[in-house]
Length: 410
Ligand code: PMP
Image (tube, rainbow, N blue to C red; front, top):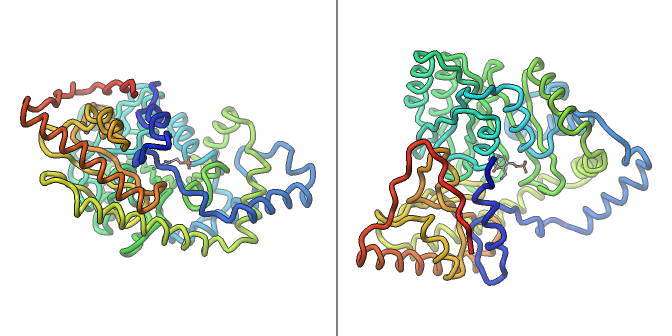
């Protein structure tokens, strides 16, 4: 296990003088905190000692029913029995990897992909293989080839991990046609799909796409989370899995943590029961949509020639690629001197790629701070371009198959 680059950055990025386009922290201050406080108080006064007792590892049954209702907003039909509550969807990733992956098994992911998923797969010694993406999502032909090659080599592919909506970090959403192709490829190769969808309801424009789960024949494990639509601090996520898999996940959860926080589940139960949470998601969407527009607008007007970036329809992230010869990782300390932070692309690949790229988050800073952040970022990039033009490209060739070391950040 290695410290993730995102984690190493938190210490720097949280300094008040820095505009952080780095972390993916939801703006929970937009929640009506007094009302959430009242809910928490009511849990103790009305549920009494039961709220402070052990619970089950599968999760509170009423909450699981509510989660099934919640998932209908994404067109997912489910029964509470097939849902396991997890400590954020992060725990679901851990449990799935624990249950399925033996050392050396292949796990396929998009390139780039969510940093802490990489760290989890690596902790269980998976052989992480990336499949490229274009602006419609993962390349289904390349996925097909990777599965064919693995089968020819007698290697086991345990699952394909995908974030189809507003992908972290690339901001890309898989098109409807691509989803159908991916389903066809994975079904033909009899490979399990892990569909991670924490951002799906945070859509600012465009049309919702059908989940892979709803198109599958039992070969998809679907992961959801309230971290982005309510609060990451309550740590409520879930996995929806065919019952045989779900039973194993519950056993793994029992050995990992015995029981969930009964109190947190009851707070969330009450929130989903009594609070206009659909309206709250609309409030989040208009706030995040404005921030996304601020970032895209600032990039459009300020970024130097040779930079490209994605245009997400939702979620928290834009993926930017720098002009040739500029190394986002090497630039970071100098960007911090310009009082702006981002996550260098290398953290989102298992094989050292991504030096020319960065993830920019728009969820936490205000639109004004975002515009100022981009101004500072452009200052840093132009400084690097001057250095490159004077001394030649500094970009080191990444070593194939090796995880680039986490930098010691100032
Ligand atoms: N998956 C993805 C794609 C994420 O971006 C995150 C959080 N950044 C998670 C899973 C984990 O979120 P949580 O455990 O808070 O539900």
